[in-house]
Length: 105
Image (tube, rainbow, N blue to C red; front, side, top):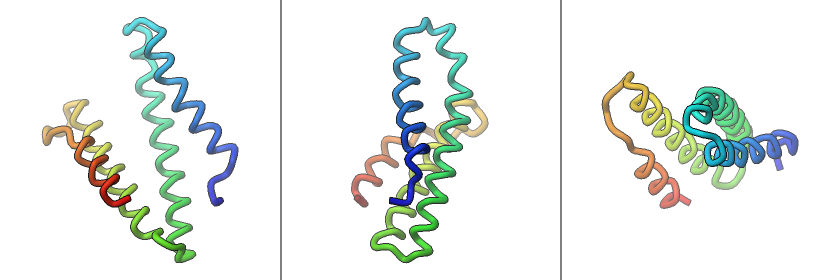
């Protein structure tokens, strides 16, 4: 496995903590965690892309397909984030991105 265990545990803890914080805290306080969560999410996605790029360079089986699918979902998620901040006005496409990701799987 190419993913470091510490990174894997870190991303799992972050993925579990954010929904719990959102459920427990009042909206006023849970909104304070959005930007740090997005920054950590970008770090996790960049690390994931690096790991997938290494697998692609080692010519592992299906690595090109997985790399392409993950890159596509990341671009769609970035579009939705920029759209939610009002920077661009294209629309929300993450449901379509996830559907196509599962279709490629």
